[in-house]
Image (cartoon, rainbow, N blue to C red; front, side, top):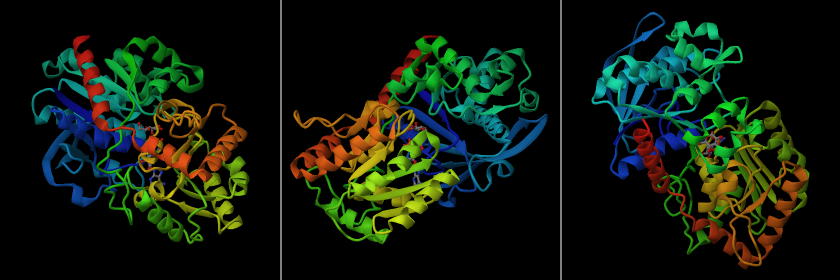
Length: 475
Ligand code: ADP
Ligand code: GLC
């Protein structure tokens, strides 16, 4: 099957969160099971030069705002599959990847350029796989072109929702300048008096997927649908949940180059060396028998930071270390810094984005906190499972699907999870985990139960291939 995957971010070229991990790994997994895949993503100022293997197209002309815009495309296989990176410096060479008032223009352009590029490089793809609101423009453009351009006639679209909370809203008045003037296009974007790129993608793509089974149900409810639940309900027969995988070439404690020592399910001794290194890195006392609760996260309301704030005192009272790596909302950053200042021998905080430190924390910590308010899939809890770091999570979205509560009687389960979004419920689980940690035999069982789980991309990629097949067969 010929598949083109379009994404606003993809590892190793760019990443702000899990979308980057997924878009980098899925094409590689599809290629490994024999499909003809190409990934298309922007070339940002943040994309390292070493990943731009060659300038493949230096005259990519894109119709844009009524005239012809000159872009280029680099070629790479740094993620393990053929990739084209669209280079349009005025739009993508910026201090950050997202967060500009004209983001709809930046990704509108990217979508037009991606479709132009696909046409330029060969035969039509069977499937164009679109991701999140940034690709809503491509969904509408492709659906429109299919009616007039024979090249696209047989191509079908799959639209994946990674986060319903970000919908790419902008003024309806901007649609003409983005090239969308037909009644079909305007209707697709129109939502409550403004334009929504997410809504357009959900409405016109041939099939829809999201990144866990539970989230596929949740986004059909008012609590998680952010106003679009009527549409996900309307299209529910075309919506499925496929849980993300883990790239075990990148996240593997037996080989991870970021770690001072390695370990496996059969020999966890190296994990203690990682713990030592982690404590030293944060200038904390090297007390190896004191548990470390850790968190690596974007600091947004989604991630349940408010529960950690409320529970912070009790985490320390439970006699544990607390280590956090994250960036985002100012208030949360300040809170974490204040927590460290209050208990400098127990708390380690790094404000910022640091890939290498994220690996060391996964390896060196004992428990990983993810009390998310909502979580479409979540990757860190799956990384934690593989690194023998026991997840303490809220039962929502992918967290509920991938973490099983520890049961001391049967010896089953790989983590601790609570349901109600309340700090006291999180604390109960923190205390339960703290208690289990003291029982070395039980703890080792919980760790090994988690490490034994296979969340590899191969399974997820096969599920996507089934979805692509169904999409092609359903018209
Ligand atoms: P989301 O995409 O909602 O942020 P996920 O759990 O799916 O959540 O993915 C988050 C990804 O981003 C993980 O790979 C995680 O390690 C990484 N990450 C988040 N914050 C940071 C940070 N401050 N430094 C390094 N990596 C981070
Ligand atoms: C989003 C979600 C996260 C998911 C990731 C990759 O950023 O917040 O839960 O794991 O996308 O699908």
